[in-house]
Amino acid sequence: MYQRTTWSHSFIQVLDDNFPIDYKGKLRELEKKVKVLNVKFENGSFSTLELLEHIDDIEKMGLGYRFQNGIRKLLDVVALRYGIDVGLEEKEESLHEASLEFRILGVGHEEKEESLHEASLGFRILREHGYNVSQDFLWRFKDSQGGFMECLQTDVKGLLSLYEASHLAFMEESDLQDAELFAAKHLLKLKGQENEALEHINHTLEFPLYHRMLRLQARCYIDACNKRQDANLLLLELATLDFNSIQAANKTELKEVSNWWNDIGLAHKLGFVRDRLVECFFWTVGMVFEPQYHSCRVGLTKVGTLITVIDDIYDVYGSIDELEIFTDAVKRWDINAMEHMPKYLQLGFRALFDTISEMGCITSNAPEEDITPILVKVWTHDKYIPTLEDYLDNAWRSVSGVVILTHGYFLINEEINKDVVDTLEKYHDLMKWSSMVFRLYNDLATYSNEIQRGKNVNVISCYMHESGVCEEVARVYLKTLIDQAWRKLIKVHLACSRELANPFIDMAINLARISCCTYQYGDGHGAPDARAKDQVLSVIIEPITIREY
Image (cartoon, rainbow, N blue to C red; front, side, top):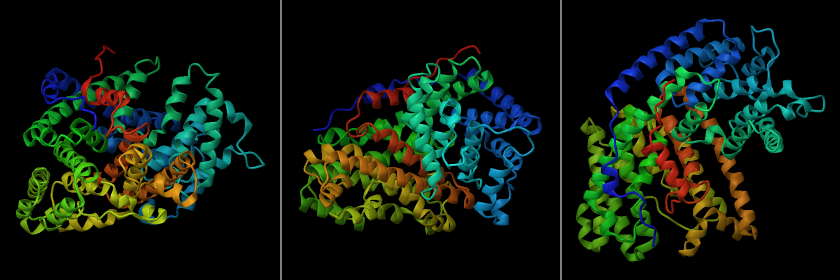
């Protein structure tokens, strides 16, 4: 029996989702001021490091979505200073040619030696935004024997930036992977010596920035900036109001889906299933937080709760004969098949049928582009017991990542037409590696509980069986697989970012991030603990205190 939900319908309905109108006016005023500041950075005589740190502050505070055009202009300035042609995609300049310029020219027009912090920060931000840079910048920080210079071992700021940059490495970039080991080793040594930087070191080593759920990171960074003497008060005030504004909207959305969840009553009628509405909503905020995607969050929360219920029907309660009837009914998408099901399956099938059919109608503006069959298809992958190799080849299909991303793709694209439907196929590898990260984190967290329930198909159990190793060794191996999956996902993500402009691309990366957030320290979905509750509180429930800056 699963633990009861922490969040009741009555608790959700009384949440304060009011965002005062005077705060809305203040938000607009502050946003205009930051846009003016961005223009000053673009046209002024600021150093490359100042430009990079300004961009980094904006994005860490969760404000990047407000200033996308301004950030792109600032990054073009940075790229040109590094000697990188900002029209690389059109000129088809090779990655190696671009990286040589990045390595040799350094800061370009600035007559000074570039620090490890600046070089690493520049690499990370430019790569995150799809510019052609590579690991070759590391050559400037190595000695004649090929190792990192000894003086870097106590450069806290440089090591922190290097560690973050190393987590955007591709599989083949061994120098960046060596840099990760070097930075981690010396940051661990410095933990006992650097009282001022201790919190920052711990935060960085816990999760690299690129793997973090964006809203949790924004909350954490805003809180940290409130303690800093040198914080940009304009950005800080805007970030605080922006965070609270988004949170208020999230509460309104949560109330909406809670009413839906309460009305269909699956949690009450099927006592064996997990009631995880709020956790599912938190998951969708992790995938797509921008205010304009209200409908996407509501729709994906419904999908998430249904996935949870159907998983419990299959894994906990249903008999093989009953589940075959249910599976066949889903494949045929036949409402009349309900009459052959027991009552509990009828409830589950009716909720699935009605929700997905409604979603298909809402997102299909043109009758000839009915996407309901596409949505139905991703619910019907068969399950089987594989070898380890087969498990890894198919694990990304057996987790619900493809279901979530497919629904998210159509929910986030407001106009559905043939081009949009056909374009989904171009994201195959993006969905594959995002779902693979999801699957592996899930396996890491749920193995013990699944074994107790008699379920033994998991990457840990497959590896233990084939290699004859203990669980501890298998878990270490699983973590290397997670690292490899991230690196493959990063490369695919950046390739897609250069070719296609679609917020779905970021949604896929965010699926991997929220998987990390949910499963890194246990099953934050199936068995949420105090840490999981605190995450929900900080992102969805408790606003940041408004201060006079």
